[in-house]
Length: 259
Image (tube, rainbow, N blue to C red; front, side, top):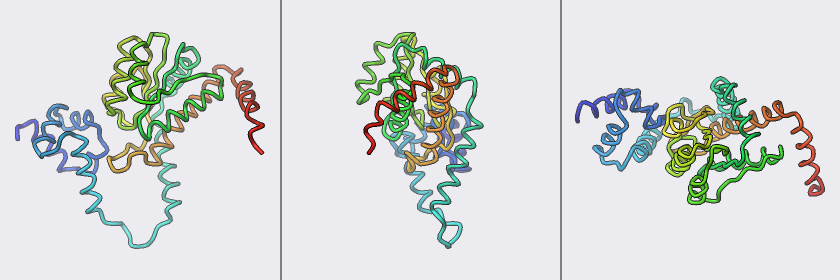
């Protein structure tokens, strides 16, 4: 291997467990190398790219990982504990100033586009729902092609909120790049501090508990993102108290749907 690839290899060998949680940008920075070198390293080992390498690494680590105890654990208690830790870490990560600025943009935007792929689409739909309760109309494209086409007509009065735990999803990146190039405000809800998406966006809202290739859509990372959505909704009502009446009105509009 070249010296650059040796740096990546040495970092992976020292702490492979942390590598499966990192974006390509994070690994390149911490190994004092470059993203191109990380890709070459993966291909040198016979993998198509970084994600394929991480998947293989995560699978091997899971295969050899031994349980700490043979005693059966309380699965519900374990999930509650991981969720609690994820929420507390997200509380520490969230920049209150960024929350207020994004909330103000949600109130002022001419058009709001929200997009996420796979498990991130769940967070996007929840955000759309919370905004609807506040009387704020947002749009979620049905697929990545429609999302990309919508971003091609973005303007500085528009707001794009992109949800991606990894911050490396190609379809999401393409929408972010297109909207940003046209002057729209672009916000990332992500679990990665350093990622291609975080580098593009004007504002980053960071959630805890990054996912591995084997734990996509994991409960702790999702609940952290949902905390961000609720924080935005509550901040909007603080900035515009009249929205509390809108919540009442939208609730009454569907009250006859309950038996």
